[in-house]
Image (cartoon, rainbow, N blue to C red; front, side):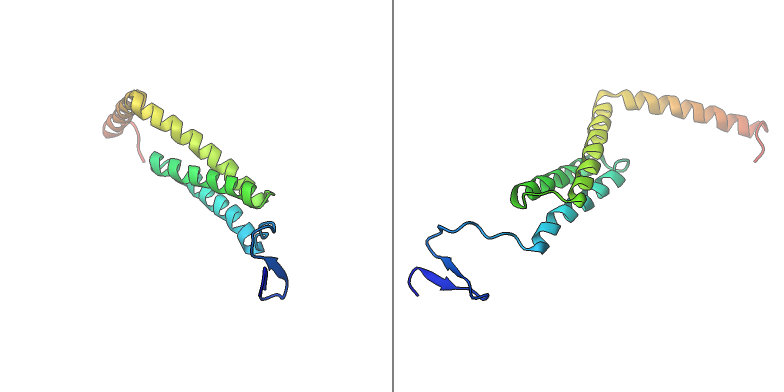
Length: 130
């Protein structure tokens, strides 16, 4: 056997590690991009439901994009779509978390509730007929 061994394809590789790292298989190159796209779209769809879940899934999509850039050395359209969706959803999520923590959203919801109450009272008085 010596310093070389034969793999299943019959090519020789050095045991000492002096050879370059093997190139990823086509399935591995697609996995990061598709994973990034799925997480990006999911985070964009969940923006209005849960800010923290959206933030976590958006960060995962960005990490998958970076992994594709590092390991695959080229970026697919799937990964770019995932990155764009993730950036948008992370920005929306951070803004909504900031609004929740500042209390500005509570004031808006109180005003909206007052306006809704006025419309309900108009409907009870017969002003609006549906």
